[in-house]
Amino acid sequence: MNDGAELKSCCAAAYQSDFARALLGDSFHPGGLELTARLGELLELKPGDELLDVAAGIGDSAIFLAQRFGCRVTGIDFGAGNVAEARARAEAAGVANLVQFEQGDAERVDYPDAGFDSVVCECAFCTFPDKRAAAAEFGRILRPGGRLGLSDLTRSRALPPELNGLLAWIACIGDAQPVGEYISHLEVAGFETLVVESHDDALKKMIRDIQGRLLAAELMAKLRKMELAGVDFQEAKVMARCAADAVRAGSLGYCLITARKRSCY
Image 1 (spheres, helix red, strand yellow):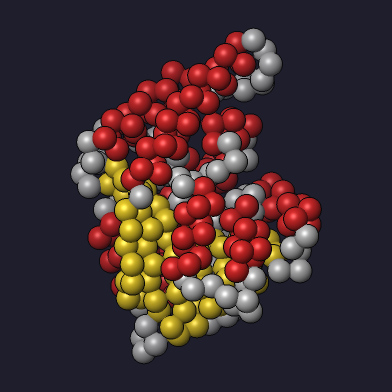
Image 2 (cartoon, rainbow, N blue to C red):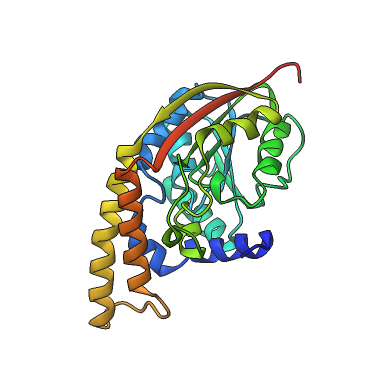
């Protein structure tokens, strides 16, 4: 899985799968919309702001932020299926005038320089094969003084081999980095860090929820009430158990980072 384009395509397809929906439920990141709201507060979003949501998935966060703060949101995602569903959700929520979605790549954002007031990227930065390129793109498209909000998994030491491989990448674990590594990428891209908050409890809860849903999905598949062809439940259960152990040991965590683009860079 060394090819960046192949990895991004595999992850995008997996996030659109029935298996991902069965395991993750309504929230594709720890803390759900509660932590999305916290990011919006830290970014000081307000009506009239132009916000880019990178790796927007099926659009729940973008729609929520537009409704909560009145900002205009552009969401991009690598998966065409996610983009189509996000557009339908925005229409159904009555916010199509504030929210739009396009297919896009975080490492090559197809928008002009200095076109956004804020950027948000939830539980996805660690999955980007070229994090430095993505950080540079965040800096390029933000206006001077613009704000960036990241939420992501972190690690404090090497993770066990069970937390490598595609399934772990899909779960945002496979290339989780120390907080300092994320901040380093942002500094090189012209950002100064504003706030770093730990939210490990949100990760613990999400893992517990996934473990419960795994058991339910396995039972439904055995009863032939859910078609999940090719799913390795044993591998998934081992990965979830190892992730829970890593969080308890302090090796794996979850944090919010907000940063501001330096005016003179």
